[in-house]
Amino acid sequence: MAGDRVNLLGLPRLELEAFVAQRLGAKPFRARQLMKWIYRRGAADFSAMSDLAKDFRAALETVAKISVPKIVTEQISADGTRKWMLRMDEVQGIETVYIPEPGRGTLCISSQVGCAMDCSFCATAQQGFNRNLSVAEIVGQVWLAQRELNDTRGKERKITNVVFMGMGEPLANYRNVVPAMRILLDDLGYDLSRRRVTLSTSGLVPQIYKLAEECNVALAVSLHAPNDELRNELVPINRKHPIDELLKACWHYLEKQNGRSVTFEYVMLDGVNDRPDHAKQLGRLLRGRPAKLNLIPFNTFAGTAYRRSPAAAIVRFRDILNELGVIATIRKTRGDDIDAACGQLAGRVTDRTLVRLGSRVMNPSERSAAVR
Ligand code: SAH
Image (cartoon, rainbow, N blue to C red; front, side, top):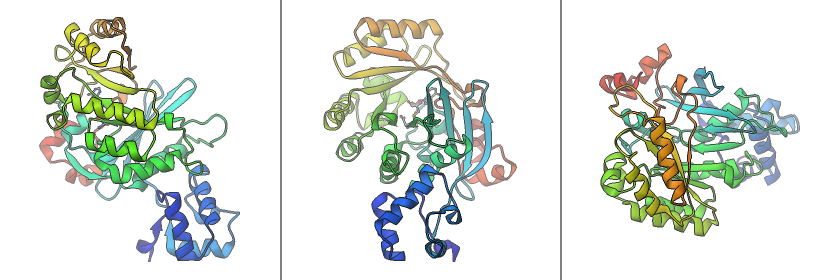
């Protein structure tokens, strides 16, 4: 029965080797061939795998499948940013965003349906938490984008970077995010260098320590405030893991993983966290540390009372930090005309079927707030 077949998408190399050995009596190199087909060539069909023996392919059909997420909608921004809403199963939709830039292309992927962190300025928070994505659903976003972008993995790869900055808190789905990252890094998988895969977290301190032992990727941390009082309000997880603890975990991560620096994200909220005094406090916190600050102009969504800081305030904020010796840059807003910018991903339901299907994702009052 089809339902019993194992989805090979998202199986880490060792598990795939064990699977072909146990279920098909095949040698480990078969697993490596399969990985190349699935990730490099984007195959979803065993019959296309021309260098595998016919009876091996037939045997595979009976015990395995490659199931990939389905696209519900695609939107393309005036600046070339593309956003896909993907159907994960009968009820759930998530969003994946591709951001092309000269010389590189970044894919921003989701790790959960919704999010439980409840950051006050984030659209995803409004829909609440629904569930974790599986390894296949996380890796499937890369598989799908590669196909849609017609990225043939030649010299001019279209997806050069992957960032866990879509919907969800990746460290709250540690169990599935780490194997997914392994496939992104594996040379038979997406073969991305560890500096080109970035995990962004709101600050789950115990998981940062755990990650330091297990996986080597670039770390980004959503800081958003220079003191605990303000951060408690903006990023509620701070009440559990205050700034001091969070920074210690970051420096530990760098030391363990031989990393160069941590990127701290800081959303610029008018009159909330954008005063010169806040910049000075931040400067004191990060001066002399292996840290980069990424200032993100707030992206608005329906139902929020926050406003974006004026451009002049953002520039002044950056200049104060630079004068204090902290590297700070302003993130260019991309794809905001299609609600694909930071913090705007809400798995918006636009497809008629999904309006119905989406009804279990959010209750009606939450939905009217999240649907812009
Ligand atoms: N949960 C993870 C991954 C999300 S990354 C994290 O918190 O890091 C998305 C980034 O966009 C985070 O830094 C997040 O704080 C920021 N963000 C959220 N809402 C935003 C908004 N409305 N405007 C700009 N940035 C926002």
